[in-house]
Image 1 (tube, helix red, strand yellow):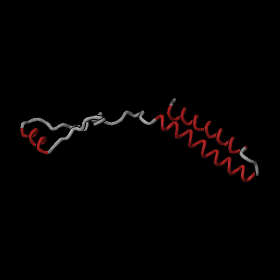
Image 2 (cartoon, helix red, strand yellow):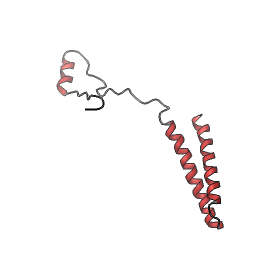
Image 3 (cartoon, rainbow, N blue to C red):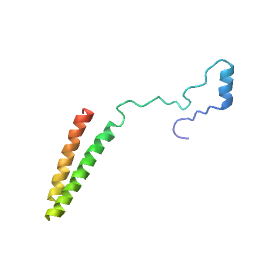
Image 4 (spheres, rainbow, N blue to C red):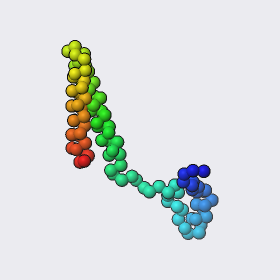
Length: 95
């Protein structure tokens, strides 16, 4: 079997521990507790970049359709969206 070994706590083990004056294990799955506050910052940064590129690129695509050009404003919008994503990363995440 691969991975970490499973730790099972049966009700009889808890009753036995209480009756002998010992406390039952507080964390039977060996969790380390809550994750640190910085967890997910990388995914947040990637999401800012991708969302900015898609939203502003989509707006540029709509402008291209309205003006009659073929991808000029979509490219400009994608670059502006990436710039906005970098700005948000620096501003909100302090990177």
